[in-house]
Image (cartoon, rainbow, N blue to C red; front, side):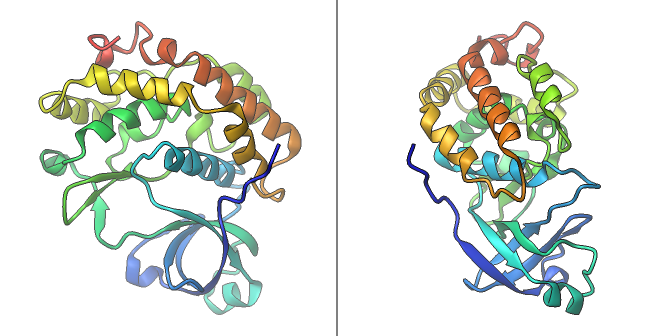
Length: 267
């Protein structure tokens, strides 16, 4: 197996969260050495020890599949910087940075009618089923809409694989569980109702299922192998790999399981 480097390391220069208005219990935005601003998510046992590996593998897979999402890089954060920014409770070392897009804002219900990339939204539904993302269908804030052309991007994959604090036993239990696309997933429902008035869903969704099923195991294994050792151990990597492969193989069944009423007409 040939290991591939997917992300470069950039150095955090200063915290600019007051300018971006992006803050959280385990994240801040930083201006970095490549002259880009990143939403930096930090290792944090209290809020979820799987946040970084979840975000990283999901971001790489989404980018590989051509889904609308922001680029990733590793961000090196030193202790002196954290102390000077009064962020001493945050971790030093290699963290995960997601490129900040100043030209987009969180999706809101009244902006759904402004969305332009219909086919890509259908592909996101399929993708979220593969990685078992339970979060996006209930949160408008996990979609960003361009203020310039109405395209949607996906953000926030902290809770893929079912949880930001998963253990191997959790992955084993969830390997064949399906995300339930029903009325409780109101964001998916609203988007789907709008999208299907613009395009025919079945062709795009089934085509994308085939695209995911066609990803080589070597590609997935390489991505998982590139997760920093500080974030995850070898046993967890192995089970993550098996989990994604299993769900990849069974994606039609997971997507169109009987209780997924939203897509009954597609399956």
